Length: 369
Ligand code: ATP
Ligand code: MG
Ligand code: MG
Image 1 (cartoon, helix red, strand yellow):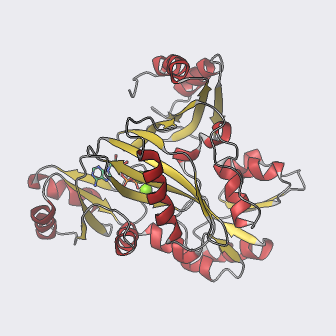
Image 2 (cartoon, rainbow, N blue to C red):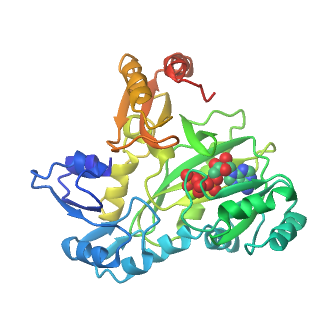
Image 3 (cartoon, rainbow, N blue to C red):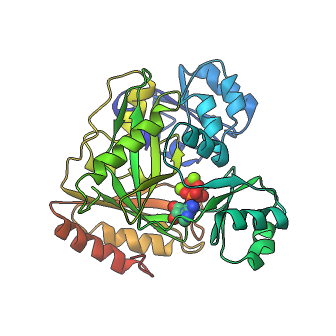
């Protein structure tokens, strides 16, 4: 999606990823003079150095990279490797946010021992959210300890990773805000969205956020902008938040890159998160983040098994729905819980959106809402 946005601006892209058929390499034809593909692991310091020699500006689409290698890459990197390093350790990220006055729920570091997690449960209460500090995504790295008898099971699952514990947050909704940050540190928030998760994986996004609280959206944007201001380097950031019953907000976590909760911006905003990421890292003027449609939803296409049949059945239905745009990522294999693509639906009203979305939800084998 970043490559597609770059193509329209004649920005030459060099991609480092393993395999000839990596998704980005399928979008960007090797025959085009705009692109040069490059084979290797983005966790390999030697490959990162080689990539740095080919480009003016280097950016990442995943935070689980070698941040130290990026720091020594020898070219401009956005966001800054120090930011990526900070964010990739969720405990360090939370500490950073807390010391800068950003709202986060209570959390403490734990050792991978039964005793340490028992102590955390005594301090923070049950249920307790045990999280891997690093390499987490789609909830793979989280364990909800509802009773201390589950601690051995939690350790069997996560014990070989550095851990920390968070107090359970009894939120009413999860919301998210994309924020674009320029090389000069100017920040601009996108509209606030509601995210609906199923089994820790984002299933649906609704834009804009609907609430009886007229102050909520602006409050959430201010929290998100203030948090993103504390990091160095340019680009888009995804700020995940918890909304409490009393209207209070906590930041859950921040992604230093285009984010799943911002995919809707491709069809629904005046400038997509991808185009604004490119504009930001290349010191071009930032584009408008405003919505250009009254109502929008994004449905992730998530694998149910190794079979692509269900994906095909859903996208076949989506192609018949007015206002629906299908994005398939070209991943070689389908797996249960794997994000294979997404569908954005735009509409003139919430009512029209609901009726269009209903057709897609009815086409899912088990509807998430
Ligand atoms: P991703 O990076 O894909 O968003 P992740 O693996 O980093 O996911 P988190 O975002 O930390 O995981 O958590 C996944 C989900 O678990 C959240 O979206 C939320 O639904 C739930 N969750 C996380 N932390 C807490 C908490 N402290 N209390 C209650 N629920 C939580
Ligand atoms: Mg995460
Ligand atoms: Mg998350």
